[in-house]
Image (cartoon, rainbow, N blue to C red):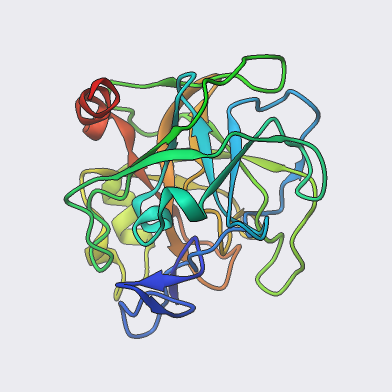
Length: 261
C-alpha cells in the first residue's frame, strides 16, 4: 500500500494513511520512521538534518537547515500545524538526548499542495531565532538544476528501520540511486504509478532497503546539496519499489521568493 512518510492528519482528520490508491497506502505521515537497511550516523555527519517535533517532544517529521533562519520540509508534514505546536530541533544525533529547540516563527506550505496527487509537497519553516552554525548545525545547499538518472544520493532520518520495528534512537542513513521517471513509473504498482509527476524524483535501492513510515520532509542529497524531499513510498517498507521525492529544482525559485518575503 502506498503511504505518506508521516503519520497524522489529512484535511484535519486524524488517520494513519492518506486514502489514495486502493491496494496501496501512502507512507504514513508522522515521523519517527525512516530508514530500512541503513546505518547509524556519527556526530556532525549530517549537520543539516533536523527533527520536527510536537510540544510533547515527539518527533513527527524530518527537515533540513538551508539558511540561518529557514528549514526545508514537506507540505504534508506541516499543512495542519502551527508555529505554536511545532518544535524545530537542530544539532541532534539521538532523538532521546541532545540538540537545541529553536522554535518556529512561521510555516509556509506550497499553495499547490494537494495530498491526493502529491504536487507541491514542499514547505518552509522560519525559525524564531537565528541559528548559530557549528560542526553539528550547518545548512545544506539547494540544487537548482534538473538531476537525471544514475546519480548516487543519500537520505537520512530517524524513522522506523522496518514496517513494525521500534523507532531507532540514532539518526540513520542510506545511499540510493536516482532513476528516470519512466523507469520509476514502470516499477511502481499500477494503482500508484499515476501519482508520479515531473516535479518528483525517484530513488531506488535493493529490496530490504529504503524509506519507511515517517520519513517525510528529510532531504535526498548529493554531498552537501539537496535535490529532493522525502514525500511518499510504497508500504510495507523495504520492498523493491522506488521511493519518491519532491524535486527541489522545480520549486527552487519559489523557495527563494518565500525566503525573501
